[in-house]
Image 1 (cartoon, rainbow, N blue to C red):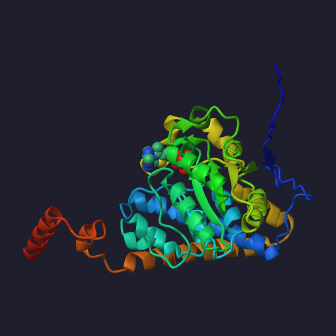
Image 2 (image 1 turned 180 degrees about the vertical axis):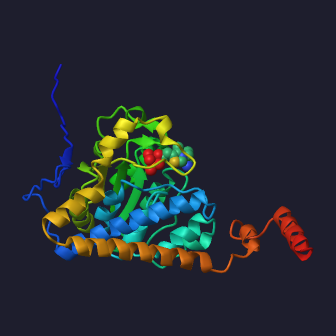
Length: 356
Ligand SMILES: Cc1ncc(C[n+]2csc(CCOP(=O)(O)OP(=O)(O)O)c2C)c(N)n1
């Protein structure tokens, strides 16, 4: 009998600015002061939008909403490494990615108020995907098309730790690996899929290692350190654009808020655990770095916070001032030709609206 090791694998973990504020200068990517301030501004803008959404949901002005608090660095670090020609496939918690990629923030308020027009954009950003992991197949299909057309773009797909248990995830990873597709898989491991903790999601030591089984690289990064996320994304995007195939980034992070506005995370997470992660808040970490390096004075930073708050008030005004959508839209866009039963219901609706 012959027994030899035919393959060995390892998974790297990347952290550049740690929770104590110590910077690993050797690993620090080349970022200008204005790029770092751009990251910070987008992070605080996202935080204010998130808080506003929560209060508006409680007032009945928008519907169910999934807060992103705590995950801003995972998304903004990725977006910072992209080009406008690249294509993004979000899940339902990608508020930071939406804002940083330059989509109007008011679209989010419009969408969450139940108006599909909030999904319309001329940017390369797919509509929000509520069914878990479906967007991975859309992304891979798009990437396959891009490869056939020889478009030099990267396709980025965001998803959570829970999505890695879906068949769609494995099918997407397999096709991406086999056809060496230009896809960056961004798994935001925020430790929970609603109430299911990460350790019950998968027996794998890391989620990043799942990429290895499909024939490409996976790396784990500190998802609350925007510099680590940016560096991993930038390296991956360079390789993707050289035609080297897909990459998987597992961002270790934490959802500081509830799963959605219909959830109460205190039922399944301890206050102590939450407090520990609050200390690792990605915004606090970047703010400390910015202040320590005197990129902004205390006054400039306060002014920036005020500017962002006013901006969000304007955004909400804009979102709430658009004309209501046509009720008849409910009946359109699902079938090429409207079936008889929908036609009947549409006629009933028209009649009832005539009555007043
Ligand atoms: C196919 C499908 N199954 C179940 C659900 C209900 N659901 C919504 S979010 C969620 C958990 C998702 O967890 P994860 O992928 O880790 O993302 P996170 O919510 O943590 O961002 C579930 C089960 C759904 N939306 N789609």
